[in-house]
Structures are given as C-alpha cells and as structure tokens.
Length: 223
Length: 223
DNA sequence: TAAATTCGATAGTAATACTATTATATTTGC
DNA sequence: GCAAATATAATAGTATTACTATCGAATTTA
Image (tube, rainbow over all chains, first blue to last red; front, side, top):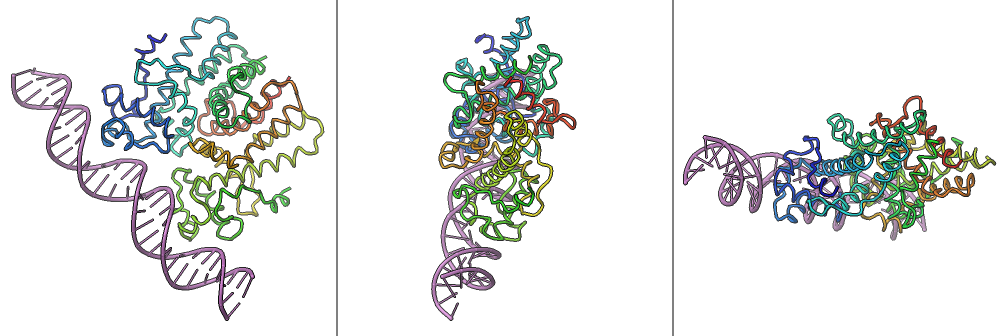
C-alpha cells in the first residue's frame, strides 16, 4: 500500500491554489516545509515570510502558489482527508460484512497516524497532528458558506458521507447516521487533542485508544 | 430563575483580565459590545480598534481591561460555561433519579440558547452562537498547556466533570465516562454548527434536535 | 481638598498580509 | 540552437493589526 500511495495524487479543488504546488520543485518545498512549520509554530504564528526564509526563497514566490495562509491550510487539510479516504476505501473495500467493514472504518478514521510514507514531501504524521490542532479553524470562519459552495470542503464531506453509508448498512433503522458519522470524525480529533492537553477530560490514554471508545459508542447505538 | 441569574456574578479567573470589566460602566460596555461585534464580524475580523469606535471610546481604554482579544475571548467563553454550569446545577439539583438527572443535563447542555435575560449587558443568545463558532480557537493554540496550568479553562473542565459524574451515577461500569462527557459538550457545539453550515453532515434540523441525538447516543451506551 | 484613579486622545513601533515591479534564470517549442 | 514564454528572486511599498507609552482632563475616594 505504501508504494501505491506514493504515486497517488490526491485531487484537490484547484481554486484553493493559484499554481499547483505539485507542478514544481518549489511548490513541493512549500508544502513540505509549511507542514513542518505549522506543526512547529502553530497556524497563528506561521507566516509566508518565515516560510520563504526556511525554503531559501521569497515571500512573494509563495504568494504565487497560494493566495493566503488560509488557502494553504485548506490545501493541506484537503490533502489529508483525501489521503485518509483512500486508506479507508482501500482497507474496507473487500470486507463483505457490514459490521466488520464499519469496525475497520472506525479504526482507520480514529487512529492517529503513526508513520509516514517517507518518500514523498508530505509527512503524514505531522499532517495528522496539524489536522487535530488546526482543522476547525479552516471552517470556523465568516466565509464558510461561500467557501463551502465553492467546494473547498467536498473531500471532507465525502468522507463523512462514506462513513454514514457504512453506518446505514449496519442498521437501516438508525435515526442519526449522519450525526454519528460526523461525531466520529470530528470527535476523534477532539479526543486526540484532549489526550495531549486535557487528560482529565478523556478516558483515552496510552492504553485506551479513541478507536476503542468510538467502536463501543457506535455499536451500542446501532444495536 | 431569570431573576436569580441576574444577580449572579460568574466568577472568572482574574488573570484573564487586567481590570475587572464588571467593575465599571465602560467595562460592561466592552463586554456588551464585544459580544455583538464578535458575533457580527467573527473573531478574526474583530479588533479592539473597531470596538473602541463602537463604544465611543478608545482602543487604549480597552487595553486597560484586556491584554488582547484572545484573553477577551477566554473571558466571554468562561462566562458562558459558568452560566451554563449554573443552569445545569439549578435544573438538575432536585432530581433524585440518576437517569432523569442525566437526561435533563443533556438537554440543558445541548440545547441552543433561545432567550437572554435581557436585563444584564450580556446577551446569552449571541454568546451561545459565539461559543459555537469560536470556542475551539481559545484552546487550539500553542499556549494551551501554559494557559491550562494558569486555570483559564477550569470552569469548562468543571462542567465536563460534572457531566461525567452524572454519567457514572447511571452506570458505574461504563468504561468511557469522561470521553462521553467531553463528546457531548464539544459535539453538541459541532452539531449546531453543522446544522447551520453543513446540513448534509448532520441529522439535526428544525425537527430533530441535538438533544434527541445525544440522549439516544448516551442511553444506548449506558444500557 | 488633596491624592488617586480612570479615561480619552495622540503618537509611535514592529509585524503582518499582502501587491507591484523588475531583472534574471530556466524551460519549452520550433 | 535560439527565441519566446515562464518561473523565480529581490526589492520596495502599502494598509492594517496589535500593541506600548505618554499626557492631561475628569472623576472618584480618602
């Protein structure tokens, strides 16, 4: 799978970038180092100027790829959700039983990324941490409806709906499949965050994973 | 209850402000209009300069009350959680049966605020919307551990733990009471957001409330 | 009534988030 | 192999943000 993923290009709404960062060496360096720097500094303290210095290039060159850092965040998180969707489909495709399929899906979605493919310029482990810490900021804005209409969140939405469909396959009668799916995906990020920063607000720790919690939660509800 | 709440002063960690905004007329105007303006402009576009103009005062005067807008957000959200905690305790105190008590608690926590006390300078309806849209930004920062140590999130944590305790009273054996409690509180905000901006990702709408969804979720898990 | 506090006004700084221009370097198309 | 097109680096500049500092007038309090 590692090798398959290597050649996979996640297709991202071309309105989030001005010039496709996959199309040049500089573009790839922008992606690579923006992941490292956003992880290191946090999104608020990250600037294109600092990124320019880091990649031995110029602020204005970065602006040729992305309109602003918000669009860059949309690019990175879209890439992450696309990558996760691929993993989800790949891992669950061949499972015939709905229960087992859903169980696997929950596992894929709620686990924290442990290793990156270490070939490409994208470090998935750090990108996962960025999503935990920064994803909400990409939609908790005044522009969310406009950007949603333009399709900036379509990969994420597709992922939630895939999970919803799997829930429905297990129990057609369940009344809240969409809410449950969105709860799992968004909630898993939150539990990972709590584990790191507010351990008293979660039961997840070294021994108990978010996967276990959500598996229990989901199958109790669908029973 | 309305009248009781009027006189209730939510006690907020005094490190979040430089000068207690409750201690002066200007301070109260700062709180009142920052709620209106953050709701209107969103947190990112809100500045102390704009606030100064709105309250017919000066940027530098606002800085005498709050170090920066992040601290102001911490103040507002702490106030909200303190207010909600009061409502929770008030409404559940006299209920003897653990199941009914928890049911009521879920209702209080997951409902959207429908009316404000309309006496004080704080508009709870708008503040609730601010919490839905902005609360995550108060802790998804690089300073979260430091600020957590200084007690900036203690009211919120106390609320989660109260809910956790109620969950435990219903079922002592349940393995994930803290995670479930944090899921309800954070997840309810998320479902309200989805209802407004991503209706395809939730089952909540005019007819189905987050309260119903979470009540079902919780009691299924605790069965 | 003196002292202390509060507030409004003004000024100033460093950083951010861009935009514009130009010269050079590299790629590509013929 | 050369001209044209494109990409990049460097520089400069602007508006806004997020503050800090100072000062004098008004108000409160002791």
